[in-house]
Image (tube, rainbow, N blue to C red):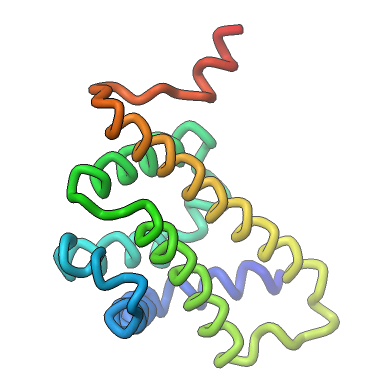
Length: 159
């Protein structure tokens, strides 16, 4: 399936994507605060993790696993003093850079493979939207000084 080939290409080029994204963030006024407060190595490691393990994030990770990871990241960034707007911009830039890469590779132009492509795009959108949602919970709980984060998924499961 074409979508699988796209994900494999992304994972294979994770190093290149992480380096390019860091360069993009460094040239973004909206991310200057993030770059001042979060070490380059940490940003590279986080983006590399997303790109390198994309098939796991899209296909095997549960909602709870994504929640746990990104609520924790939201808490970490809030404690580092990163504004929520800078954090959101960086997540959006991560997604946009991935789109740019796929366009440069000429992989979003195959009309016969449209269904698989749309399936992948939907999964990517959903994944990044959940990152933003769960990380915002982390930011909010850090601002309230909560040691443990409230889990909207666990709250629903208890009902």
